[in-house]
Amino acid sequence: MLEFIGTIAICAACLWLVRYLWRFWRYRQSISTVEALALAVKAKADFVAINAGSDAAESPYFIAACLKGLADSLSYGSIASPLVAKAQLNVLEQMIGSPDDVAFIMDRSIESITDIRLGLIHARESFILLHQAIETR
Image (cartoon, rainbow, N blue to C red; front, side):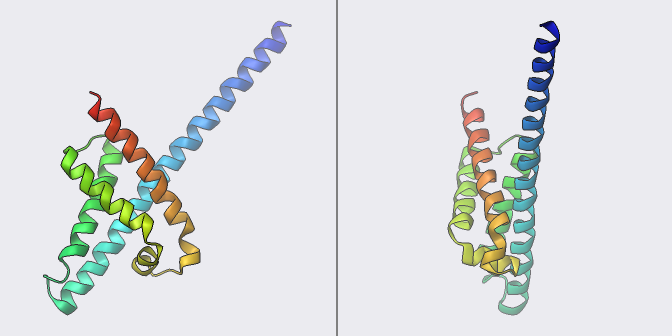
């Protein structure tokens, strides 16, 4: 009987560990997705700045900075300020809501960006949880 209980306990601990590692991997993937999107937006902004001037690239640079800041916030587990966090979350919501823009920025077809959109959704969930945790302190 004790062997059976021990086996059950070991299986439960292994399942907990697998679940923890899966969530951590998914969390890291969402951070990588946001960083990749930020780099792609910055590259497009650089292209726009070269061709149309720095004034035309102001909005893409802002989006790239917000996405990079959001990825850094998730990596370090801290938020600069609630106002900045709100702007970062708004930019992330825009990216999630416009798959055409994400496909254009990443130079991929709309069908091939499902993994990117899923990573952005997970990043949004993690960022909201981080923001709520910091607000309750």
